[in-house]
Image 1 (cartoon, rainbow, N blue to C red):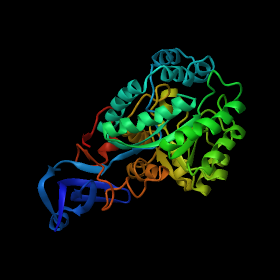
Image 2: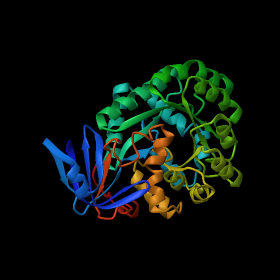
Image 3: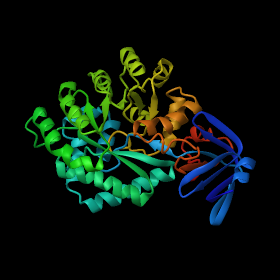
Image 4: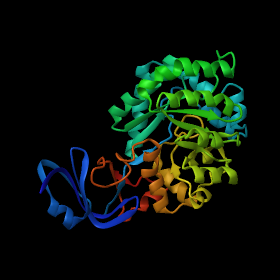
Length: 392
């Protein structure tokens, strides 16, 4: 019998992509799952070591730790005033054009110390973990100079260690033009020559905001190509307010994903389905900004790889709950509970290059487990405004 330091027994159900077990148990050792299956089989195969944690899972269900592959969790300042202005009818793009939006947060981040940013981010990540997120991608993009962008990613990793959340860092240098930039072309050069090298030690990917009022495909291309030459994965914000060529560029360059997709039409759906570039849907942002929901059902039906994430950020999605995303995926994006679970676990793990590490409850995977306070695992999708995560 294999010695283990964690046993969760008598689970009503265990749901992991591609299978659901009932009357099950999970055993783990040194942070890795060693057995999962019908409880009698698991208990015959393992032996709790001295001091092992043993959890009675009666009345509970288990799902993999949720993987949030699109967040902007490091920031300072407040955007509540913008929220009130939008509530009175002022569009987000108009606020951004007047110096609000991303630029307002850039000013606040540049004015904060690393220690202040870390304290803020630890609290946010701890809340995300309590809501079931055990792995999160965190982007830079609110510094827009080499020192501030690198500091944001250092903060993300330090805060993740403190909060117990696995962090994947992304350099979002092309998020907005900083006030000191002479032109978009000049800032792209700065991003390639200065920001990218400064962020590379803390990042596994890069991203860019390809959108009207932000950066064009022609401006994003050299930055993405430079990042690819350094071995970094490519991500794009695209089709949030308009179709400006994000999907064709992502397909051409072999990007890991295009994220947002609120305005994606039939041609974009077809390209994503044919290419294998992941379609990351951010329904909390669409809800918050009153945008069309991304076409997740059409994408899934076409064969695209549909992924879910929060877009957690101070301006357009100040909500850190992947559990809320699961509910929106079923109620607004028309995904089944099983499709939503896969899109919030294994599918985002693949986007982050962690598909052999997290996203499943299977032997060999990290013991990232969320216990749901219901015998039916689908309660993770069903509840709205209630936290069904009992233990993470």
